[in-house]
Length: 374
Image (tube, rainbow, N blue to C red; front, side, top):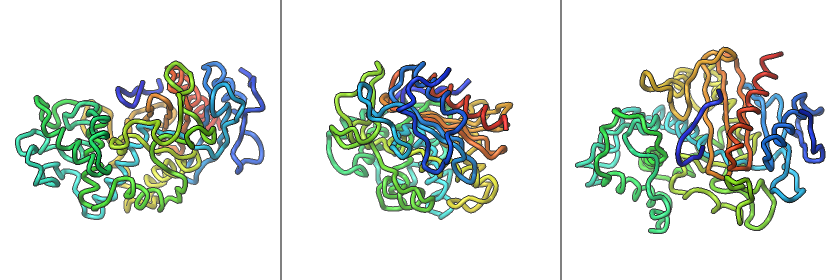
Protein backbone atom coordinates (compact mmCIF):
# COMPACT_ATOMS: atom_id res chain seq x y z
CA UNK A 1 0.00 0.00 0.00
CA UNK A 2 1.89 3.02 -1.18
CA UNK A 3 1.40 6.62 -2.18
CA UNK A 4 2.23 5.57 -5.72
CA UNK A 5 -0.39 2.88 -6.15
CA UNK A 6 -3.57 2.54 -4.13
CA UNK A 7 -5.40 3.23 -0.87
CA UNK A 8 -7.31 0.95 1.43
CA UNK A 9 -9.59 1.61 4.38
CA UNK A 10 -9.61 0.42 8.05
CA UNK A 11 -12.11 -2.36 7.98
CA UNK A 12 -0.59 -7.08 25.09
CA UNK A 13 1.44 -5.43 27.38
CA UNK A 14 4.29 -3.01 26.72
CA UNK A 15 7.75 -4.50 26.28
CA UNK A 16 9.98 -1.44 25.87
CA UNK A 17 8.95 1.13 28.44
CA UNK A 18 12.08 3.29 28.02
CA UNK A 19 10.94 4.14 24.48
CA UNK A 20 7.44 5.34 25.34
CA UNK A 21 6.77 9.08 25.38
CA UNK A 22 3.62 11.12 25.98
CA UNK A 23 2.86 14.66 24.92
CA UNK A 24 4.08 17.50 27.09
CA UNK A 25 0.50 18.70 27.51
CA UNK A 26 -0.53 15.50 29.30
CA UNK A 27 0.22 15.19 33.01
CA UNK A 28 -0.41 11.44 33.11
CA UNK A 29 0.10 8.73 30.47
CA UNK A 30 -3.00 7.86 28.44
CA UNK A 31 -4.70 4.62 29.40
CA UNK A 32 -3.91 3.19 25.97
CA UNK A 33 -0.17 3.84 26.06
CA UNK A 34 0.83 0.24 26.82
CA UNK A 35 -1.40 -1.08 24.05
CA UNK A 36 0.18 1.32 21.56
CA UNK A 37 3.59 -0.10 22.40
CA UNK A 38 2.23 -3.64 22.15
CA UNK A 39 0.98 -2.90 18.62
CA UNK A 40 4.39 -1.52 17.66
CA UNK A 41 6.16 -4.62 18.96
CA UNK A 42 3.69 -7.04 17.38
CA UNK A 43 4.15 -5.49 13.95
CA UNK A 44 7.91 -4.96 14.35
CA UNK A 45 7.89 -1.23 13.62
CA UNK A 46 10.62 1.22 14.64
CA UNK A 47 8.35 3.99 15.88
CA UNK A 48 4.67 4.77 16.04
CA UNK A 49 2.44 7.57 17.30
CA UNK A 50 -1.24 8.32 17.64
CA UNK A 51 -3.70 10.87 18.93
CA UNK A 52 -7.37 11.42 19.64
CA UNK A 53 -8.59 14.80 18.43
CA UNK A 54 -11.73 16.90 18.85
CA UNK A 55 -12.59 20.31 17.42
CA UNK A 56 -10.78 21.75 20.45
CA UNK A 57 -7.55 19.90 19.60
CA UNK A 58 -5.72 16.84 20.92
CA UNK A 59 -7.32 15.19 23.93
CA UNK A 60 -4.86 12.30 24.22
CA UNK A 61 -1.65 11.31 22.45
CA UNK A 62 1.44 9.17 22.76
CA UNK A 63 4.42 7.98 20.75
CA UNK A 64 6.70 5.00 21.26
CA UNK A 65 9.66 3.22 19.75
CA UNK A 66 12.81 4.60 18.15
CA UNK A 67 13.65 6.99 15.38
CA UNK A 68 15.85 4.43 13.63
CA UNK A 69 15.84 0.65 13.94
CA UNK A 70 19.01 -0.66 15.53
CA UNK A 71 19.45 2.41 17.73
CA UNK A 72 18.07 3.41 21.11
CA UNK A 73 17.23 6.99 20.09
CA UNK A 74 13.62 7.37 21.15
CA UNK A 75 10.78 8.90 19.17
CA UNK A 76 9.75 12.16 20.85
CA UNK A 77 6.26 13.74 21.05
CA UNK A 78 7.17 16.70 18.85
CA UNK A 79 8.94 14.66 16.15
CA UNK A 80 7.97 15.13 12.50
CA UNK A 81 5.94 12.52 10.61
CA UNK A 82 5.65 12.21 6.85
CA UNK A 83 1.94 12.26 5.96
CA UNK A 84 2.03 11.06 2.34
CA UNK A 85 -1.39 11.25 0.72
CA UNK A 86 -2.97 12.82 3.78
CA UNK A 87 -1.57 15.92 2.09
CA UNK A 88 -4.45 15.64 -0.41
CA UNK A 89 -7.05 16.90 2.06
CA UNK A 90 -4.81 19.92 2.67
CA UNK A 91 -4.54 20.70 -1.05
CA UNK A 92 -8.31 20.34 -1.38
CA UNK A 93 -8.81 22.73 1.53
CA UNK A 94 -6.53 25.23 -0.20
CA UNK A 95 -8.67 24.84 -3.31
CA UNK A 96 -11.81 25.59 -1.30
CA UNK A 97 -10.17 28.75 0.02
CA UNK A 98 -9.42 29.77 -3.58
CA UNK A 99 -13.03 29.11 -4.58
CA UNK A 100 -14.38 31.22 -1.72
CA UNK A 101 -11.94 33.98 -2.68
CA UNK A 102 -13.21 33.97 -6.25
CA UNK A 103 -9.89 32.82 -7.68
CA UNK A 104 -11.41 29.63 -9.12
CA UNK A 105 -14.68 27.78 -9.42
CA UNK A 106 -15.16 24.11 -8.69
CA UNK A 107 -16.00 23.65 -12.38
CA UNK A 108 -13.02 25.67 -13.64
CA UNK A 109 -11.20 23.57 -16.25
CA UNK A 110 -7.56 23.11 -17.12
CA UNK A 111 -8.30 24.56 -20.54
CA UNK A 112 -9.74 27.74 -19.01
CA UNK A 113 -6.89 28.26 -16.56
CA UNK A 114 -4.14 27.44 -19.07
CA UNK A 115 -5.44 28.80 -22.41
CA UNK A 116 -1.90 29.12 -23.82
CA UNK A 117 -1.12 25.43 -23.33
CA UNK A 118 -1.34 24.31 -26.96
CA UNK A 119 -1.37 20.58 -26.33
CA UNK A 120 -4.43 20.92 -24.11
CA UNK A 121 -6.47 22.11 -27.07
CA UNK A 122 -6.49 18.59 -28.54
CA UNK A 123 -6.63 16.67 -25.26
CA UNK A 124 -9.73 15.59 -23.33
CA UNK A 125 -7.94 16.98 -20.26
CA UNK A 126 -8.86 20.47 -21.40
CA UNK A 127 -12.32 19.79 -19.95
CA UNK A 128 -11.08 18.32 -16.67
CA UNK A 129 -12.43 20.41 -13.80
CA UNK A 130 -10.87 21.30 -10.47
CA UNK A 131 -13.42 19.00 -8.84
CA UNK A 132 -12.49 16.09 -11.10
CA UNK A 133 -8.77 16.55 -10.47
CA UNK A 134 -9.29 16.56 -6.70
CA UNK A 135 -11.68 13.58 -6.65
CA UNK A 136 -9.76 11.39 -9.14
CA UNK A 137 -12.22 11.67 -12.03
CA UNK A 138 -9.90 13.49 -14.47
CA UNK A 139 -8.96 10.36 -16.41
CA UNK A 140 -5.25 10.71 -15.61
CA UNK A 141 -3.32 7.63 -14.48
CA UNK A 142 -1.73 7.42 -11.05
CA UNK A 143 1.63 8.97 -11.84
CA UNK A 144 3.76 10.80 -14.34
CA UNK A 145 7.46 10.14 -14.87
CA UNK A 146 8.25 12.29 -11.84
CA UNK A 147 11.99 11.75 -11.71
CA UNK A 148 12.40 12.61 -15.39
CA UNK A 149 10.51 15.83 -14.79
CA UNK A 150 12.70 16.54 -11.77
CA UNK A 151 15.97 15.95 -13.60
CA UNK A 152 14.82 18.12 -16.52
CA UNK A 153 15.31 21.01 -14.11
CA UNK A 154 13.52 24.23 -13.25
CA UNK A 155 11.81 25.32 -10.06
CA UNK A 156 8.81 23.37 -8.80
CA UNK A 157 6.27 25.59 -10.47
CA UNK A 158 8.07 25.08 -13.79
CA UNK A 159 8.18 21.34 -13.13
CA UNK A 160 4.43 21.27 -12.57
CA UNK A 161 4.01 23.10 -15.87
CA UNK A 162 6.04 20.28 -17.43
CA UNK A 163 3.74 17.76 -15.74
CA UNK A 164 0.77 19.56 -17.32
CA UNK A 165 2.39 19.51 -20.75
CA UNK A 166 3.19 15.81 -20.42
CA UNK A 167 -0.39 15.09 -19.33
CA UNK A 168 -1.79 16.99 -22.31
CA UNK A 169 0.36 14.89 -24.64
CA UNK A 170 -0.67 11.57 -23.09
CA UNK A 171 -2.66 9.56 -25.65
CA UNK A 172 -5.87 7.59 -25.18
CA UNK A 173 -7.03 9.27 -21.98
CA UNK A 174 -10.68 8.62 -21.08
CA UNK A 175 -12.99 11.63 -21.02
CA UNK A 176 -13.04 13.37 -17.61
CA UNK A 177 -15.79 11.97 -15.41
CA UNK A 178 -15.91 8.55 -17.08
CA UNK A 179 -13.47 6.54 -14.94
CA UNK A 180 -12.41 6.86 -11.32
CA UNK A 181 -8.62 6.54 -11.36
CA UNK A 182 -6.66 7.38 -8.21
CA UNK A 183 -4.21 9.96 -9.50
CA UNK A 184 -1.34 11.80 -7.86
CA UNK A 185 -0.84 13.37 -11.27
CA UNK A 186 -4.29 14.93 -11.07
CA UNK A 187 -3.47 16.46 -7.69
CA UNK A 188 -0.22 17.88 -8.99
CA UNK A 189 -2.16 19.62 -11.77
CA UNK A 190 -4.81 20.87 -9.34
CA UNK A 191 -1.97 22.35 -7.30
CA UNK A 192 -0.63 23.95 -10.45
CA UNK A 193 -4.03 25.55 -11.10
CA UNK A 194 -3.78 27.13 -7.67
CA UNK A 195 -0.26 28.32 -8.47
CA UNK A 196 -1.52 29.92 -11.67
CA UNK A 197 -4.42 31.88 -10.16
CA UNK A 198 -2.41 33.03 -7.14
CA UNK A 199 0.91 33.43 -8.99
CA UNK A 200 2.87 31.65 -6.27
CA UNK A 201 4.27 28.15 -5.62
CA UNK A 202 1.93 25.62 -4.03
CA UNK A 203 4.29 25.24 -1.07
CA UNK A 204 4.09 28.96 -0.27
CA UNK A 205 0.33 28.97 -0.74
CA UNK A 206 -0.03 26.14 1.76
CA UNK A 207 2.04 28.01 4.32
CA UNK A 208 0.17 31.29 3.81
CA UNK A 209 -3.43 30.14 3.48
CA UNK A 210 -3.60 26.89 5.46
CA UNK A 211 -0.75 26.44 7.91
CA UNK A 212 -0.27 29.98 9.26
CA UNK A 213 -3.98 30.67 10.01
CA UNK A 214 -4.18 27.40 11.96
CA UNK A 215 -1.02 28.04 13.96
CA UNK A 216 0.79 25.17 12.26
CA UNK A 217 4.41 26.18 12.75
CA UNK A 218 6.54 23.11 12.01
CA UNK A 219 5.12 21.83 8.73
CA UNK A 220 7.51 21.15 5.88
CA UNK A 221 7.81 19.26 2.62
CA UNK A 222 9.75 16.15 1.70
CA UNK A 223 11.63 13.72 3.89
CA UNK A 224 12.39 14.49 7.52
CA UNK A 225 15.60 15.05 9.44
CA UNK A 226 19.11 16.25 8.76
CA UNK A 227 20.98 13.93 6.37
CA UNK A 228 23.11 11.54 8.39
CA UNK A 229 21.72 12.66 11.76
CA UNK A 230 19.08 10.78 13.71
CA UNK A 231 17.30 13.96 14.73
CA UNK A 232 13.87 12.96 13.38
CA UNK A 233 12.09 9.68 12.59
CA UNK A 234 14.27 7.91 10.01
CA UNK A 235 12.50 6.36 6.99
CA UNK A 236 12.41 2.57 6.67
CA UNK A 237 12.02 0.50 3.51
CA UNK A 238 9.19 -1.98 2.84
CA UNK A 239 11.47 -4.72 4.20
CA UNK A 240 11.56 -2.88 7.52
CA UNK A 241 15.22 -1.90 7.27
CA UNK A 242 16.38 1.73 7.56
CA UNK A 243 16.96 3.53 4.27
CA UNK A 244 20.56 4.29 3.35
CA UNK A 245 20.12 7.93 4.28
CA UNK A 246 17.46 10.39 5.42
CA UNK A 247 16.61 14.05 4.97
CA UNK A 248 14.49 16.18 2.60
CA UNK A 249 15.40 14.26 -0.56
CA UNK A 250 14.27 10.91 0.84
CA UNK A 251 10.81 11.24 -0.62
CA UNK A 252 8.97 11.13 -3.90
CA UNK A 253 9.88 13.91 -6.32
CA UNK A 254 8.81 17.29 -4.93
CA UNK A 255 6.87 18.12 -8.11
CA UNK A 256 4.02 15.89 -6.89
CA UNK A 257 3.88 17.86 -3.63
CA UNK A 258 0.12 18.60 -3.76
CA UNK A 259 -0.48 14.84 -3.76
CA UNK A 260 1.66 13.91 -0.81
CA UNK A 261 4.88 15.51 0.49
CA UNK A 262 3.83 17.29 3.70
CA UNK A 263 5.40 16.43 7.04
CA UNK A 264 4.60 17.80 10.50
CA UNK A 265 4.34 16.72 14.15
CA UNK A 266 1.18 15.09 15.46
CA UNK A 267 0.31 18.29 17.30
CA UNK A 268 0.25 20.30 14.06
CA UNK A 269 -1.60 17.64 12.07
CA UNK A 270 -4.19 17.62 14.84
CA UNK A 271 -4.77 21.35 14.26
CA UNK A 272 -5.68 20.66 10.64
CA UNK A 273 -7.92 17.74 11.63
CA UNK A 274 -9.58 19.82 14.37
CA UNK A 275 -10.28 22.52 11.79
CA UNK A 276 -12.34 20.12 9.70
CA UNK A 277 -14.30 19.04 12.76
CA UNK A 278 -14.86 22.64 13.87
CA UNK A 279 -15.77 23.74 10.36
CA UNK A 280 -18.75 21.41 10.23
CA UNK A 281 -20.04 23.17 13.35
CA UNK A 282 -19.59 26.61 11.74
CA UNK A 283 -16.53 27.29 13.89
CA UNK A 284 -13.81 26.92 11.26
CA UNK A 285 -11.04 29.45 10.67
CA UNK A 286 -10.20 28.76 7.02
CA UNK A 287 -13.57 28.65 5.26
CA UNK A 288 -16.59 30.90 5.67
CA UNK A 289 -19.42 28.40 6.03
CA UNK A 290 -20.13 24.90 7.29
CA UNK A 291 -21.42 24.17 3.79
CA UNK A 292 -17.92 24.69 2.40
CA UNK A 293 -16.53 22.03 4.71
CA UNK A 294 -19.44 19.70 4.00
CA UNK A 295 -18.72 20.11 0.28
CA UNK A 296 -15.16 18.88 0.85
CA UNK A 297 -16.51 15.91 2.82
CA UNK A 298 -19.05 14.75 0.25
CA UNK A 299 -18.36 12.23 -2.52
CA UNK A 300 -18.55 13.87 -5.93
CA UNK A 301 -20.21 10.98 -7.78
CA UNK A 302 -22.62 8.30 -6.64
CA UNK A 303 -21.20 4.84 -6.20
CA UNK A 304 -17.62 5.95 -5.48
CA UNK A 305 -17.00 7.22 -1.92
CA UNK A 306 -14.18 9.62 -2.77
CA UNK A 307 -14.71 13.25 -1.81
CA UNK A 308 -11.91 15.87 -1.77
CA UNK A 309 -8.89 14.20 -0.20
CA UNK A 310 -11.16 12.01 1.90
CA UNK A 311 -13.06 8.78 1.59
CA UNK A 312 -16.63 9.47 2.71
CA UNK A 313 -17.98 6.39 4.50
CA UNK A 314 -20.61 5.23 6.96
CA UNK A 315 -19.58 3.58 10.25
CA UNK A 316 -21.71 2.59 13.26
CA UNK A 317 -19.35 4.31 15.69
CA UNK A 318 -19.32 7.65 13.85
CA UNK A 319 -22.13 7.91 11.33
CA UNK A 320 -20.85 9.72 8.22
CA UNK A 321 -17.06 9.49 8.62
CA UNK A 322 -14.01 10.50 6.65
CA UNK A 323 -10.79 8.60 6.19
CA UNK A 324 -7.54 8.59 4.26
CA UNK A 325 -4.13 7.03 4.56
CA UNK A 326 -0.79 7.92 3.11
CA UNK A 327 2.62 6.49 2.34
CA UNK A 328 5.72 7.41 0.39
CA UNK A 329 6.80 3.72 0.71
CA UNK A 330 9.03 4.65 3.68
CA UNK A 331 6.44 6.06 6.11
CA UNK A 332 2.72 5.54 6.73
CA UNK A 333 -0.10 7.62 8.20
CA UNK A 334 -3.86 7.30 8.64
CA UNK A 335 -6.72 9.58 9.72
CA UNK A 336 -10.34 8.83 10.66
CA UNK A 337 -12.78 11.68 11.32
CA UNK A 338 -16.31 11.52 12.72
CA UNK A 339 -17.59 15.11 12.32
CA UNK A 340 -21.06 14.21 13.62
CA UNK A 341 -19.46 12.99 16.85
CA UNK A 342 -16.78 15.72 16.99
CA UNK A 343 -13.79 13.44 17.21
CA UNK A 344 -11.03 11.98 15.06
CA UNK A 345 -8.04 9.69 15.41
CA UNK A 346 -4.69 9.95 13.66
CA UNK A 347 -1.69 7.62 13.62
CA UNK A 348 1.77 7.53 12.01
CA UNK A 349 4.80 5.29 11.69
CA UNK A 350 8.23 5.74 10.14
CA UNK A 351 8.06 2.45 8.26
CA UNK A 352 7.19 1.39 4.73
CA UNK A 353 6.60 -2.18 5.84
CA UNK A 354 3.43 -3.96 4.74
CA UNK A 355 2.86 -4.50 8.44
CA UNK A 356 2.58 -0.74 8.86
CA UNK A 357 -0.92 -0.62 7.35
CA UNK A 358 -2.18 -3.30 9.74
CA UNK A 359 -0.48 -1.63 12.68
CA UNK A 360 -2.06 1.76 11.98
CA UNK A 361 -5.43 0.08 11.47
CA UNK A 362 -4.99 -1.43 14.93
CA UNK A 363 -3.99 1.92 16.45
CA UNK A 364 -6.96 3.68 14.86
CA UNK A 365 -9.31 0.96 16.09
CA UNK A 366 -7.83 1.19 19.58
CA UNK A 367 -8.25 4.98 19.74
CA UNK A 368 -11.79 4.89 18.34
CA UNK A 369 -12.71 2.32 20.95
CA UNK A 370 -11.15 4.35 23.74
CA UNK A 371 -12.96 7.52 22.73
CA UNK A 372 -16.37 5.99 22.08
CA UNK A 373 -16.26 3.95 25.30
CA UNK A 374 -16.39 7.11 27.38
